[in-house]
Image 1: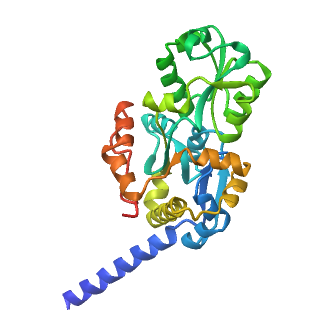
Image 2 (image 1 turned 90 degrees about the vertical axis):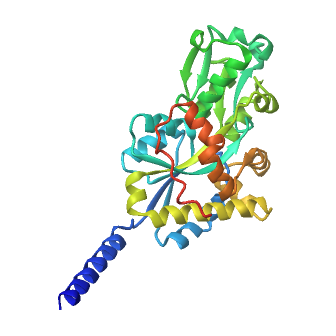
Image 3 (image 1 turned 180 degrees about the vertical axis):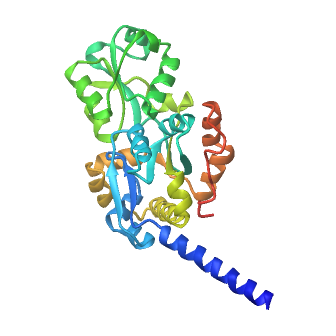
Length: 313
């Protein structure tokens, strides 16, 4: 009799826990992303594939930089930041922010994030020390700041002697066009294209690659959302990797992606062509012992900031 009662009680407890988990599932998923930063899953964003897979509405909000994404996550307004810069994430978890890195959005060279000097200034890689004492625009706390710092090491210019002004990419592009700054470090196809109308890259894409300057964008989630909705996190990542596979196979609808990124088709193709979308296996390797792992260790990122369990392997 006791065994029967125990079995009944156990069944009731299990049912209660399963029902509790079901009711704790979010009734919508709030995702942060960037404009001018085209990715294969934007086709699924437009076609509502994410909604179909997740079973709830998905609200996408664009942000100017990865730091703003972090702020929104900490405020409880965003659940998932897609293609957040690695540097803003690292800065956040170093401050004990309750965030977790669960996927790599892409790796990229300096085609999509770069520093551009104005032609009027006459400053190039050869005389980059002339940047010292002058105004330069940098979106601080982003991958563009990382590119700025690494580029200055390559060209031998001292950041501490420059007048570094915080400007998001669109602002930085406008400032270099107007002549208010002699250099702008920025990301995003449209902003880079605008800056290049009056300037040139301080380092070419190949020069930056040869110097080992690599950009990595990631997918981060709040630990609260991850713990309460693990199935949704896994599904979001699965849909994204399916989109990446479709792109690698040449089957993406590039017109849809360009429109959603608010870019001209040719500009979008140029930008996305500089991105490398890793397979799930490549992603896991990078997160555990490859490029991402090296980057995190190099910046003394707290251990336990990465979770590979949601990858569709």
